[in-house]
Image 1 (cartoon, helix red, strand yellow):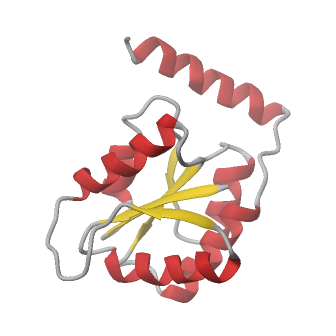
Image 2: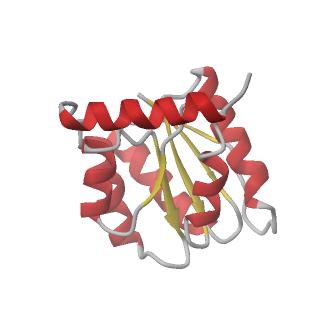
Image 3: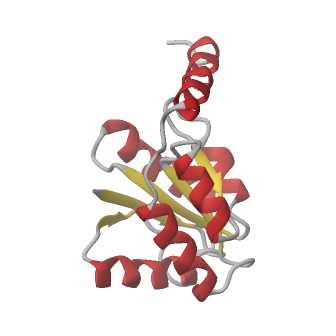
Length: 150
């Protein structure tokens, strides 16, 4: 599995710490920025990361901004992306097991590193349950098909 990571300035410090965690765990990733000391628009970095997931270069994404909300909004504009802002391990677990989330968004201004690493660990390790949840994800995909025009 290869993870796309990206942040704006508000998420940079947390992203850097999570990248170190990914390296420690031997999880492949590609960092799309931003860099230290930059003041940037989260949209630009979310777009680069999401393009890599949609193209198949990366399998999933973890995006960081001040709250995780802006990055989730950007990511969910992409067909096939189910981006979920998570604020604790339970929301991360359910986002994967019930919603088959392929993009996690986190807030650099709302989470400590300790909280974030548990969320990331849970999100990476939790499989999609399928079953009744597959039916619901299929309905989401049908809504997406109707609303994303070629």
